[in-house]
Image: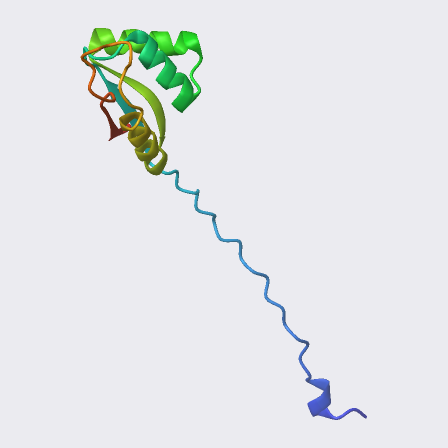
Length: 115
């Protein structure tokens, strides 16, 4: 006859992990790179800069140059804050427009939070 102590041996219990709801990954805030108008840079300069720094094709560069000329500013890129700061700094470092004698340096740009 089996011993009563050995008959009461409990089987090992396993716990099933409860699935926790996943948090959606937070998207980094987006920032606009804004190019500001002045009278010291030609359309050619703006289009060349936008192609070199942003990869904008000729047609897009012309439209943005027109927008800057008409409204005083144009959003040339929307991206993460760090990338926007880099692109703003690249605009500031692009140099003077050799086609405009009075031009003393690069165009102005800034960044601002989207929305």
